[in-house]
Image 1 (tube, rainbow, N blue to C red):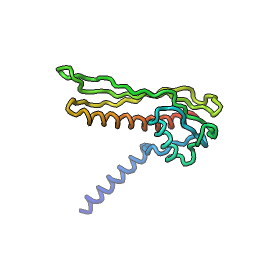
Image 2: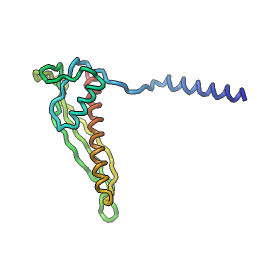
Image 3: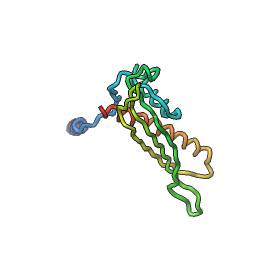
Image 4: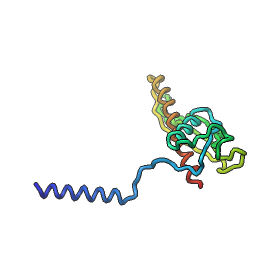
Length: 163
């Protein structure tokens, strides 16, 4: 019995050592090179997600206005689209791909470009059923909100890695 326990302890120790040695670590917070950032433009969902990320992860980094900010994240365009991925044998939609496109740039309050306009495309696949129209509509909105939050995190990571 003592031998089996010893073997299991050695296996656990080897597993922990290999996991620690592979370089895996959680993503964590993004360190922005700017003391204050203002978010400008957008239809609301992405702007709100960026502001929330700046408030939560970067206390004091969200500027109250563009004039008081060191840098401005300017949302140039946002677009939602839906593409049919597959149809049933009788021609009904079975699956959609939801796409969320964003174009943004980072500028100074005076308008000087820090980070040139960049595009971001996110996509999620969604099954569809005519019998569940209301539920699928809610699922679609939830997926778009998820893509906006994901886009906000990706924009902040790109800004951090650009410097």
